[in-house]
Image (cartoon, rainbow, N blue to C red; front, side):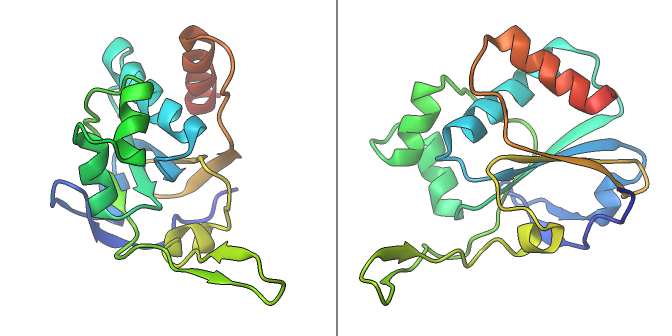
Length: 173
């Protein structure tokens, strides 16, 4: 897989402008998903740990989230919201890499013709262009903005050392 990462021009949660030029000169791990997904929350925590404990010069992380900025606010607040509970339960302190909220508004729920409640997926614009529907999905992008590989899911079992080894293998093999 050596196609270009789809073009994007977004602001991360801190307000910093990001586009494809961010890839130039660095290997990039792009993780996509939603923060209320347990494996995604664990991946966000482990990526932060990976950066603290290994030489990651030349490697950067970007998280594209199927969430709104309000969800990220609640993730960082000490609230009883779903997002705040995930941060506390997974013992996530601060995330230092860019987090991009792809959703501009809450998901809309509606009943389908069989009467079941469906929640629309209105904000996964980049995910659709990469053709991924799993949370989390990891994409490794080279220093020229080309996708090297894509991996769906994240190990939810095993200890931190096992998961860090999984990340290291994804990045370096």
